[in-house]
Image 1: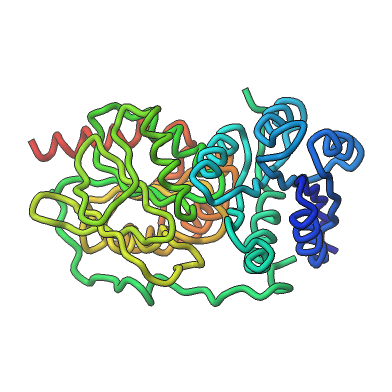
Image 2 (image 1 turned 180 degrees about the vertical axis):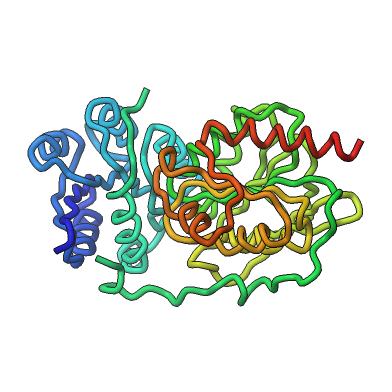
Length: 362
């Protein structure tokens, strides 16, 4: 018998509470309680000891961010935020993830009642993943609901048979999902201004990636921006894939160029880590360094194996420091990872490889 996941839904909207309750209650391994505000939630947390909490940001009496901060200090619990797709909602969600939330679901801005059902499978998937997340004190399967067919990277980006030779300029490619916003911040903010060019895919919808890039840019020594088509990846710069668009790498006369394209979700994600990694096989091959980090699912594992086979150096975050050990685990199981390292070792490792690369080219 599957272990029961106890979920507490905290939202001041009766419509949202009922939608989340009824959606999650259809799962045989979930038991759901609700609370209209953080004060009522506090009592239910002490009584029910939930495994996962879904949390709105804008609520009366106490906002979701204040409650999250108190919760993670007193009773660390996996939290999935249910937040607006607006720009202000995106910025608040970035703060929530920094405070310890595991993941988020973007709430439709208009026609809420009509658009909510389309979020059902995403909510179930993220709550179930959050139940297994590792959270720290802060200083059943989805078949019951219809889900779209999974599109593999082979249907979107062909694998080149002739990757470049070694000796070209180095480029770093990074992919992450659940828990990735905090993990990426820890890595990128430890890099000095003189760093290799970096391209990042973090699973996020549109609007949220711009807020994420701006937040990182304010904290990092390197320049970080949301990717736009045709931008050059140069040393000391990092491009974050735009939500709702795939990011691909192309080799141009002046270096590596970002290509931002529409297309179907790959592994149910857009942007997809596999798409970025696969495109880099032909653009960079053995001159790439690929990093796969915390996240549920398997997006990025196949693309990393392609890069590994093309001679790139590949790095996976270890289980102990992952919020969800899904994507790195799949890469390791496929034999795609040359090195498995804790989160705090990734930035020093990248800089060591960058120094070696420049030494060889001098």
